[in-house]
Image 1 (cartoon, rainbow, N blue to C red):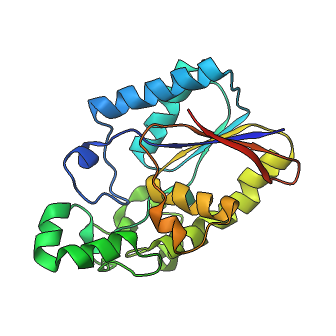
Image 2 (image 1 turned 60 degrees about the vertical axis):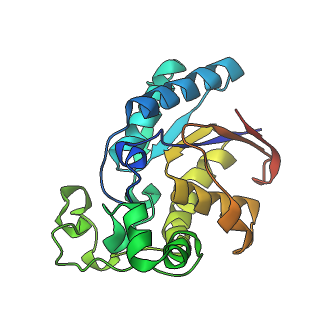
Length: 228
């Protein structure tokens, strides 16, 4: 029975400052480092051993994976990084203080941008200096697929092909898999594998640094779910 573990990265420096982060590459805070290490200790205590790891191309997720694997004695396992597991792109809101945005646009509008399944945030233009098109880690991507902003629906559409091409085949082969990523990319995967409705997924939260463990059958149906 394969195991699948999701871990949202530990608290980041911008989480601490209450800023919209998205694809901006920020580091873990001191608390975030400890959350990631604690996740690893919990995994070790639970006796969960992994065969494959996946993460995004953003520092906070990569470091969370490495701290968790190091604490559980599994830093050596194969890992793959992909932009498809990146956080949702918050468009022109990235780098903005959430409270300031609420003051400027209104609480209700900001709530809609953050929580609606299919409403896009204000988009970042491709020629903006903050565009991911200027980031070397995305140099091999077709510029047409680099987002200027995403909602959860769009995030799910870019995450699921990676699930189907990489994560699901590993699980079907009986491998235990750990995915260290972000609140929204993991919520997208959670929606998909748990078959959660568009409305109900908006109430699903992913706590920073908390391992979510799924036991799956040989058809990838969920047999058990546990939060460590």
